Amino acid sequence: MKNKYIFSLLTGILLMASSCQKNKYLNPASTTSLPDFQAFDTPDRILSQVRGLYGTAKSGTFLGGRFSIYNDVRADNFINETNNAVTALQTWNFTVNNNAQETTGCWAQAYLAINNCNLFLEGMAGKGNTVAGATLAANYNAEAKFVRALCYYSLLQLYARPYWDGNGSKPGLPLRLTGNKNPGDYNLARSTVDDVYKQILKDLDEAETGLPLTYSSAVLNTTRAHRNTAIALKTRVYLSMGKYDKVITEANKIVSATAPFTATTGVNHALQADITTVFKTPYTTTESILSFPFLIGADVPGTQNQLGYYFGTANGSSVAGANGEFSLNAAGVIADPNWKATDKRRNFIYTATTGKKYLTKYAAGSPFTDYAPAIRYSEVLLNLAEALVRVNNTVDPQAVALLSAVRSRSDATTTYTVASFADATALINAILQERNIEFLAEGRRSPDLLRLGLTIPAKSTVPAIPSSDSRYIWPISANELLYNHLCVDN
Image (cartoon, rainbow, N blue to C red; front, side, top):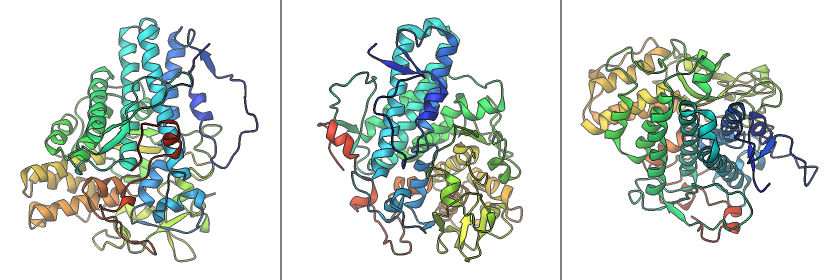
């Protein structure tokens, strides 16, 4: 029994242990895995493995919590309040090194998820495709490729130079496309950024073909990848690469030409009239293209991994159990006078008795069962708006309408027109600021700065980090460098 496959969502859940906890047993007996000759024996077992792929990726140390947190706190909208090295202090002040738990933990969890996808795809090719049948096999294989693409894309945002730097020629990631089953030779050089992006897009193109248009419920449409999920992620990927014409091509598949902007095929994605409903039970609106769910019980992000724990505060009982790790920077986006008090997104801002402001977007409180948002329809609209302006180099009317749709659904007192902007640059700046407001604490701020080569602004005692600074991206995990002798550091 050389190899064991994860086959249930519970397996993914068990991976979400606290970074502060220590294993009591060196060799625990597994009760949640099967030998490879049984793991693909039945359709139910195969479906359980598919669920497990999402479970591994949504670990609190990765896409279910910390990845988003890291990409927000390393930028300019939050101030560290606790000086706790365990809860992203080094990310906030740009002192992470190869051995930092941020660097090693995020890398390890991402590659664990990637490896599970690789093992699953190999198992499907060997036996599972026949057992599942052609339709379900295509669906499941596409989901594995989608999860793998999302993981690789996410890693690029922290550990590799942005695409604009050398047109993707800089070192990217070890591109592992086969499963590691036993201890052995893990030496693999880093592929270029461009090569990693090419694989991501290959996976997403194939996922788009194999994924279903919809599932049978709103929950499944929110928590599992369908055709529009792959398309939406492609708009993000192409935006990161600066391939704006491709952004337009992909976005046009799921965005109607005129307002009200909706997806006319597949899941009927649309902006919600009230943005606050997106972040409340049941978390399954048609705006939520992909979110990672958490349920009371074992399926929670784990101690010191939760979004609400970091960004909320228990001061005044705004978010029960929150620790107020990061307050909102008074000089950050909340200081924008054009972000009006009438904007419903201001309802996410809570002023504690100390006078400091915190974000309550994730307000479920302990045990922190808020869904972790991964892709929302408003992002697709703003991706398309930005791409239209950059391609046409003009105050594009459709781009203005897309921007206005996102702003006016939260602030009915604001409606943008072509006359609102002096030139294309003014419109681009407005779109970028809208992203800054709309996706506050959703992990988009640092990737937006990096994809454009912008300086990461100064905050409190932390100086600005220009794109030429070595701290602009993270170092490679020390564990990878230890076991992979072909991998070089940043």
